[in-house]
Image (tube, each protein chain N blue to C red):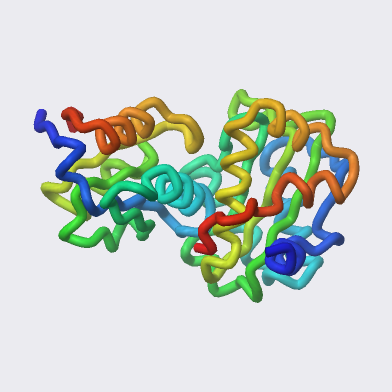
Amino acid sequence: MAAINGKDIHKLIVACDAGMGSSVMLAAQLRKELKKFPVEVSHTPVASIPADADIVVTHSELATRARQAAPGIPVVPFEVFIGDPAVKRLVTIIKEGGDLDV
Amino acid sequence: MSDGLTALLDPRGIRLDAVAADRDDAIRQCGRALVDIGAVLEPYVDTMLARERSVPTYLGEGVAIPHGTTDGKDSVVRDALAVLRFPGGVDWNGETVSVCIGIAARGDGHVAVLAQLAEVLLDPERARALREATTHEEILGLLQPTEGAPAS
């Protein structure tokens, strides 16, 4: 298991299927929450995750596809779209520093 | 901003006293509402069901946001939302859904409203207000993006 430090995250991708619903909402939430931090948040379909992404956030059902599509990029899977503990932890390490096992 | 929400949320797309037999029925009704207001073509509805089977759209606080898949985008005529309230609740994989917000989107015109929805659901009081809304005005008031929210 590898670890990533919050200070090294500058490009965060919320990966989704159609990109019209829940992932778009999560991306908007994260963008708002991380507005004051040097992190670019975008949403893309799982199949087109940019190779220079630092971290990928995706629903657990899509995590396997995300890992295949973006080998080597850490993936944070979540279960619920609002208030998921894994996403909260990620936001905390981006804001305050610290490592996240991925 | 109010123009944005009004353009997305046709009053005919808001139903306050819907009744559904089950999750798929509720999704079909959301799809039907989007078809009725001219936002999507019929084939979109099946992609909403397909999407729900791959990744459920239940958000929490009794709210789900059924929408189509990438394949369904061709059937989207314009960005729109439909809000269906099910006062009796609908079983959604073991959760109880009281409000379904059906989404049709080609672009990002609806993102500010979804961000606002996330804010509402993070606030238990406002989430309850959404579940218990009995007028169009209450629904519109809750989903109105707040000042300064990012446009996309």
